[in-house]
Image (cartoon, rainbow, N blue to C red; front, side, top):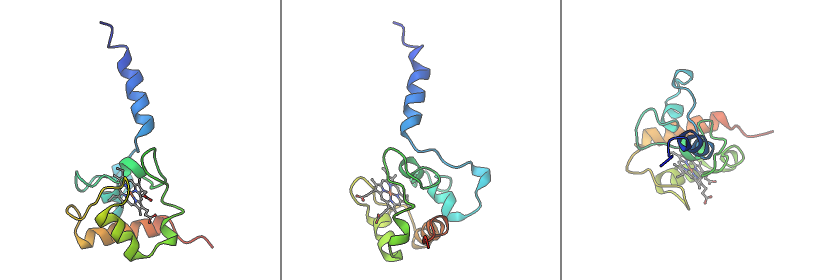
Length: 112
Ligand code: HEC
């Protein structure tokens, strides 16, 4: 059995698919900390949308989407999920949903 030499290859292949969180020390915004998985273990938006929200293999880039949506619409997707997006209504308080939306708004302003 020659399995060991494959491990680094697998690790590289997996990390290419998954989103990567932004470094903890670069973040102070509560919404950014939630999005990047540092506040609650079950809240891990970065895995699909990448730490900066610009998308990874499992989730779309949020930059073109967020400016086109109302706060109500964003809150609904976060609470109830959609398609392959899981629901977070059991894991996020209303205040936390608001914090995540505020961070996405600040990260992805309306293009002029
Ligand atoms: C398992 C992967 C996954 C995770 C984790 C995930 N998302 Fe998503 N998200 C998706 C996918 C896939 C879509 C596209 C859904 C569609 O359009 O059908 C999406 C769409 C969105 C949208 C766009 C909605 C729209 O109306 O276009 C927002 C905003 C969003 N996600 C925010 C978040 C936030 C915030 C979190 C963490 C609380 C999160 N996502 C966690 C996969 C994920």
